[in-house]
Length: 106
Image 1 (cartoon, rainbow, N blue to C red):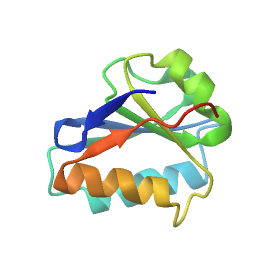
Image 2 (cartoon, one colour):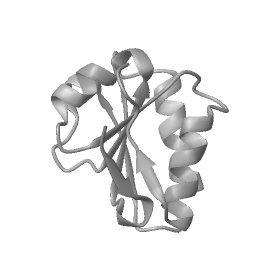
Image 3 (spheres, rainbow, N blue to C red):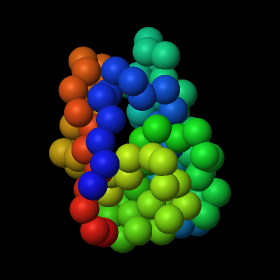
Image 4 (cartoon, rainbow, N blue to C red):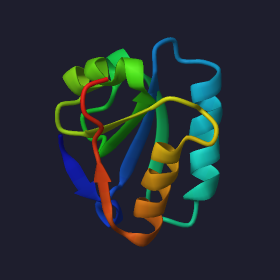
């Protein structure tokens, strides 16, 4: 399991399987929440995560694929697109500093 200090995050990627729908909305929400910080929020299919991603947020079932495609990134799997505590923890860590810890397994 990997980690990064939230204050060091410069690129956060929301990854999904198909590239549409709820994950696009989550990326837009995160852009709004983090807009005053020097953090780029992008949305990509799990098979095309950029190599310079610091943190990847994805559904828990996609976490292993995200780790394989972005071995240098901290991968955080979540269960719900809205209101998931793992997403809230990442946002808080990026805003205020503190660890962003990758989730184990899927």
